[in-house]
Amino acid sequence: MLGTQDLIQFIIAGILLNIAPGPDSILIMTRSATQGWRAGSAAALGIGAGTLVHIMAAALGLSALLATSATAFTIVKLAGAAYLLYVGISMLLSKAKSAEQAQAGITSQPLLSHRKIFMQGFLTNVLNPKVAIFFLAFVPQFIAADASNKPLALIVLGCIFNFNGMIWCHLLAVSTAFARQRMRVNQAVTLWLNRFIGLMFVSFGIKLALSNKN
Image (cartoon, rainbow, N blue to C red; front, side, top):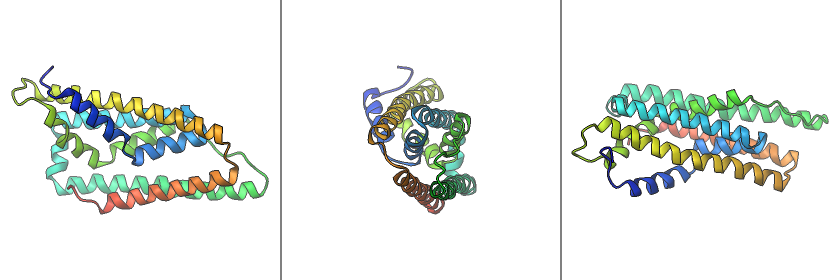
């Protein structure tokens, strides 16, 4: 179909890859746990928008530049690492402030708008050069050698991958919000959980900064 091959295997592999934990999943779970499933879905939509950018970049050959140019890869990698560190440190600082408010008897916490959460998801995904190289290395394996329009086939496969990913991401958002509501975790546990997640984002940023193209 449209120059693709082994479509069932591609869908299964894509679902497994989407389920694998990473910064995107952590962001969705964090926003769902703190602000409800709509906030988690906003993060998921931002991640999906970022994935679309990677799909189009791969179809246009821009991902090949990241794969072959050490300078381009390093620039995008450091930008992505800096953003992950920014998100993680911001969470640590904001939660520390919330702890002080809790001691003073103030339980309300500032909430991010869905627009800002969307942009968080978008930037977390689009600034990760590993995602770009993934589309360049993984998706072409499922494009037929005799495909008349390989860029179109890549876009089709990328959109299938993104669609399945969005299903998983929104299920993750809803299930996390549901679990949070059922568990009724108290304020202190929530603050420590968010600190832990902030540390995870910092570790993701450091790992990305120290990574290479392979």
